[in-house]
Image 1 (cartoon, rainbow, N blue to C red):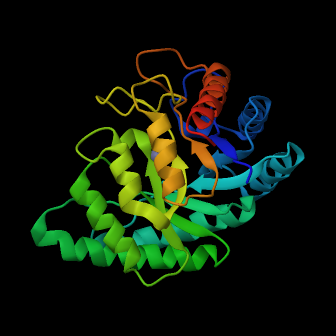
Image 2: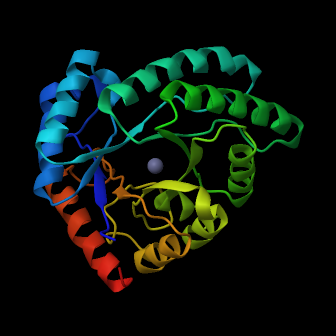
Amino acid sequence: MEIKIGCNTLYSAGRLSNEDAFTLPHQLRALEIIADAGFDAVEYSHASVLTLEELAQVAERTRALGLIPWSVHAWTPLAADDAQVEPTLAAFQSAAEIARALGTRVVVVHSAGGMDPARLEERKRANQTTLRALAEAVGPETVVAVENMRSLADWEFLLNMVATCGAANVGVNIDTGHANLGDLGVVRAIEMAGAAIQTTHLQDNFGERDDHLPPGLGQIDFVAALAAFRKAGYTGVYMVEISDCPSGREPDAVADTQAAARNLRSFLAQAGF
Ligand SMILES: [Zn+2]
């Protein structure tokens, strides 16, 4: 089976201070950078700034470049509590519309809420109500993938929340950078999730802050991580999620995207793919 690799869309005109600056020409340029680097697939990181007509143009350019429209990031998280359910449901209708317009296979979403025992039942109820609604809105051909953060206890909660939500087209996304902060750990996050893994956010850091560096530029053991994905039975795209506004250095979308492709190919070879 041929392994597919992907990268998220990066802003290439300097530091992105306001998402509204990521207009259609920048989106089309981001796709070109990803294709030029040799990636097979794309995650749309900033799609909510586009109109439906612009989304259609992005989808068209994705096809023309031979890229797989793999995933899109929904930036409104699953509701943390009952009060957040209504506004979240409204935001998810538009997230689902964006996913349909782009034709993506996966919608990535975060979960809001903490681990306060007194409020955990409410978090679970609100998370599940909004997750089911998003899963229904995107339709059965698309999967909603809930992303890990940095804590082991939170990941245990999320895996149970997803498994018992009652929708079929749901799963999880492994963000390697988040797992490398806090007490979760990258390989453990993958092993715990197993067959629930639907997509990845491969990104690197030094265990201190959420840098979203290209794999290989931090200290995460990606050979071990990739071996764990394979052992878990993961057969989807190996998707990178790097930052277009890195802290402590100048943004360079072309260099970072190319480094991510080169390093990921090398790690895959070392992991025996
Ligand atoms: Zn992520």
